[in-house]
Image (cartoon, rainbow, N blue to C red; front, side, top):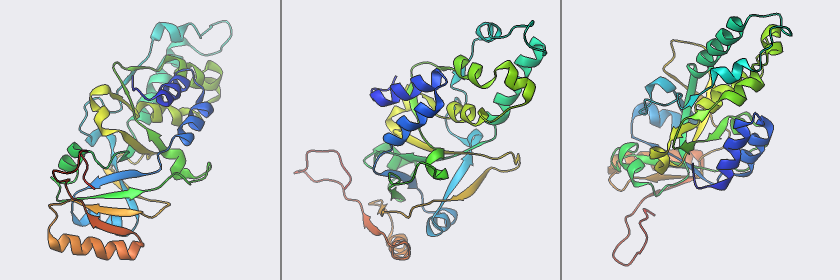
Length: 272
């Protein structure tokens, strides 16, 4: 599990179905700054200028285990079921669980951020080999009831899949199945999309997670509630693109600069 204690507490609350406690831990630990790496392309420039975030369908992501980093114990779920108490069959109970999990997990759209601007693999892969840019945002002052803040989740990196059994028991109590109560299903689709294998931990990722049941969408734009605080351009960005970035930064009211690689007198591996 990740070395950050608060993430251990966070995933522990999710495991136990303590969803409100988990959300509070998350709010208290949103980093002061988050960063989004982008390549230079017309659609990326447009979303930046419009202060929007492009969110992609989870099926298009690099990791084949994205939205699949979980499992559940069928026998343990059956222990919560009592034929004498509930007027619904075991098969209906289990079928409904699988149907709803599949529906929520497969209709998820995600926008990605990182905590670390000095992330060289991300500059290389996501910012087009230092020819792209990185946008800095400060989400720390968003209010508790802000929808964007609520949809912002930390990725938790684990050495094995997350046991979803207890969370499922919280959401899919037989009485909820009978009454068709689905108010907690959103948390299931969030949990499924924040668990990644520990080999991805270098990304230090946060995700904006949203849901849309339009099966034809490959992605969509959402409005960001704060403007960028700075735009960092790769040191290999061409002069025309850099001029365009400076124009956009003036429109958005934020700073803009090119990163520089430290010389022989700088001891840290940094790009600023």
